[in-house]
Image (tube, rainbow, N blue to C red; front, side, top):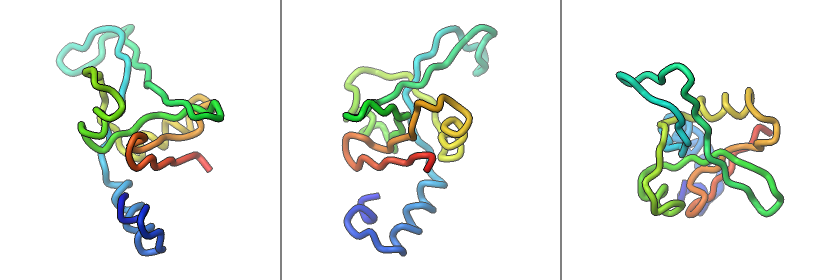
Length: 115
């Protein structure tokens, strides 16, 4: 991401897209309910935490590692590991008021929208 943000050449854009498509992201959640043997028990719910920009648009959060997550929250966070495809599918099938997802919002601040 840093390479692309420094030099937005077509080659670096291709590399960035390739790396994002292979990456695993930490996505902060609120888990209500229980997990048994790695499976959510009936009635359990997962709510994804969001970030809102100055235009009052909401985005899912995606962090590349624990250090990036700690830039957002110093408290322990419940997280899921999500892929680009997971986040894209949540965005396309979910709440139309959520405009996209942002990778490392307190460092690189790379925004991906449904557009």
